[in-house]
Image (cartoon, rainbow, N blue to C red; front, side, top):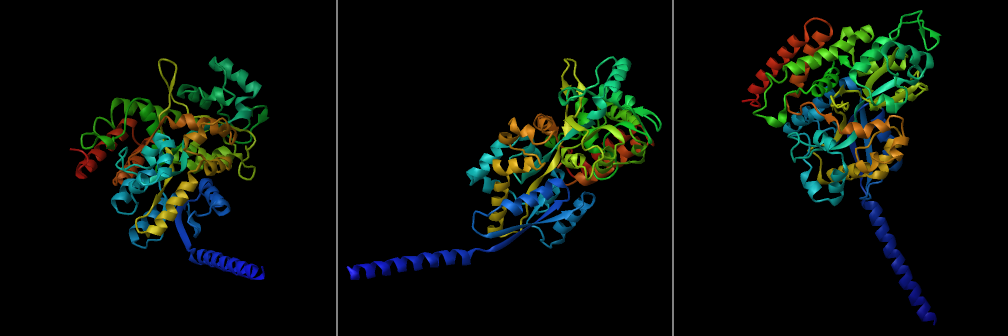
Length: 477
């Protein structure tokens, strides 16, 4: 018996030693891997960093650290482009605006994902769950092709922010109905049913001067009815103007139709000119800064948070700052609704809008191991559990299995507007020439916004420039 016990103990000791060695070998083989990611500095990327720090564990067992390089939005494109083209190979991933896809794919910087998706049922399931407008805008190049390059990091859409304390005030409601003959929308469901004619009325009605009364209080400063993007920087007027163009039944140059798609006669069609005139007609109800060409997304956000305007159009991504008492004077007076549109003959609202938000992309110089770690992070980010955490913290999910639930609407007061808005999203161009197209278009739009030229002159100049540039690039025959 003693011998048997001794031999049993020896066997157990050997097994323990083997298991210990195996465990030690596993620990020893775990690698420290850093994924450097370029990101714009705003709440959705800050939330992502926080969630990754708290919850992400690489399935490989490696010690994977996500390091985000936060770059201010106004400088983000230039700094990311400079890094990619310099050859420094600083970033393993980036958050990219969709319109940068063509330039950086054809430049050899963004990694094509098809072979990874084809080999991975989990990635295939992610793409089946994503809203198709997000896949088209954030993932594909050429646009709407079967070539995939990105995953949604933060889907974003334009919505309405409004002062519920003003729109729901009994005195203001009575005065509004007496003047315009219909009820001033108060709750989000009513505000969802607004068209541009109504927005014009809001702008006119809520314009008050210093010393006037607003919701029972005497103003000490001028107050304005509405505001939306009208800035010359980056894409800050194009994003709003494109919505008007599409809602009026006109179009921008369509890259999916090259080389047969035209700019002349399309970009400056009668409908496109009328759409731009419609956009310009509402500027009269906005703070005078709009006429300086500096009404960008940040100025619109600031004006609303500083209690200078009753109703704005803004990206969902700025919603957190409107709700925070640290950053907003109206944090307890805000509500949200879908962006308005053009009322159709049947009473429905045409809501076409330019999609915002950004995809993740992987860079092409990573090792196979780093690429796999980056893909594993993207898969973790796009699980329903992580997406739910992101949404609860103030982000948005492109997964239909997440954003279509009733629970999703409870996370933030704007979430009821997010899912339905996705159905109405289109995008600006993705081709490498996008930046030249955008800069010239922004400048021409700005000349009309600031009163230097007419809407027709602006659209004619834009169409002519695009025709010449795209012909030189071989994109129009």
